[in-house]
Length: 401
Image 1 (cartoon, rainbow, N blue to C red):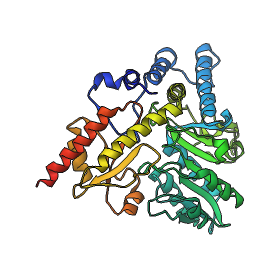
Image 2 (image 1 turned 90 degrees about the vertical axis):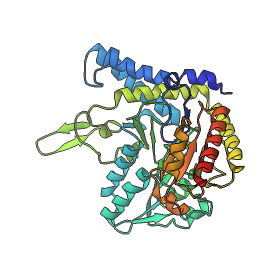
Image 3 (image 1 turned 180 degrees about the horizontal axis):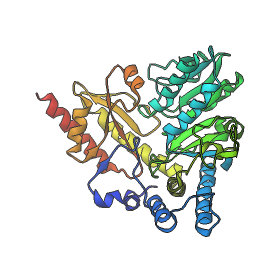
């Protein structure tokens, strides 16, 4: 079981903000001490580049960096050659989409959904415009879920790419991606999965899911910001046209031509995110030590406890009461979400207000924006109770006019 008091000792921000009630981990998780230490250690004791130098510091740094790649690979059940370090999930998703500018053609179909984060749908929207491919949306259920049946209703022999979220950052719904990937591969389509919300909360096995690409970020899993991961099947990564050109990714250069190294190097031009990768590996160690079973048990308990109390308040609309991820998307009837969020902040309660970089979800719900409370291992029942009381007080204040 999770001991929240002990957990908070691992997150230095609580030393500076002891009364903070942080309910915005779906946007960015707090940073664990071990990851911060590894980043600091790189800058204070190493600070050099990887792969290039024939001296001890360079060798040690390269071992740490490539060791981080191995750790990430183990974390998602891949091989190191299938792991590309990027500056975030957005960068990773754009990297794949950019390559398909030269692969797709007019008449091809790209399947996506209204649940997507902008970084998952916008790159493919641009690809569709550039190539004259067609962007197809999976019909959602009334609840707002992607289902296997809904996916099959739009899958055709023209489908070339399936770009979907694994877990919605707004609704917290889990996509049945294993079944979807199986159907997609029957028509030789590739599956690009946005795992930014799933990888920090559940064991993701890329081989079991049989997806072709996966993107996720370090900052949502207690690690540094500015680092992300693109997983891709090795033979596919070796075929991708690089997103950037420069040092280290090149094999041979002449005055009028060049060839690229095999993956992952061909997709990591220039100096990579060294400190970020090392810090991310430390964060993954922390998650592994805690265990996903314990993380899920704690966040599920927090989620259900808060959900039950929120349902008891009048004048509250909850949009995702059956979410798998510990996320509550809601509004106070008749009050703008930003006004509620501002009042909650007076109680040191931090929630997200807006469209959450997923405007299609708001449009599906028929609202301009929503409030989102999300939970993680450092939250406790006091956080939940204070959140509920703050929402109640804010509701009463605004409805009193």
